[in-house]
Length: 213
Figure (tube, rainbow, N blue to C red):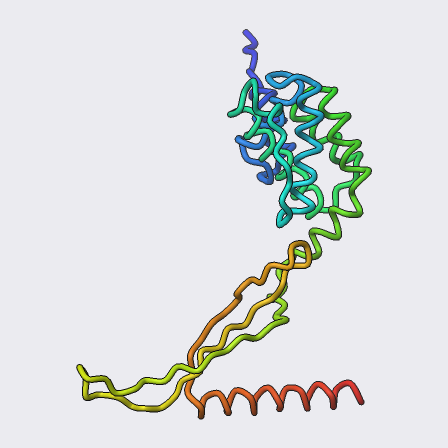
């Protein structure tokens, strides 16, 4: 007698194939909320707001209360899911066709797929530029602040070097807000500071020589 073999769950197989480990179960569930747990109108507003959060994470974006009015937990999960989806799609160079195929494999609501794909296609260039700004590059230092710290002898302590130390803070200004961000801070004495300056001058001379040749 022939025995029938049961195939693995179609849902689990397609989910694994679609995400390839790039999208977590939380993200997938958040995407599936769109157009189902959350109405089509709310989903559209949420996707637009998620795009703003993706492109301008340092900006002050006005809240949209109606997104969270009916089901705040699901809305927040979906918002996180959309931001993650666009980040993953951009990082791996998906075009709109690939994005749509991935979403269809995950059985996301059809109306939500249309909106997610449309927004991605319309803003793909900006998303790529944003991804390039993030990357894995070293921080871009554009500002230096410093102050002198001197250890003086007090009435309660006889131990004092009397030598000044320099507190150096390297940072940058955010283009979006003009806010200064501290990247690294360190303390050194006069000899160590002079050594650092000499090393930086050596680097400058080397760069100039390379540029000439």
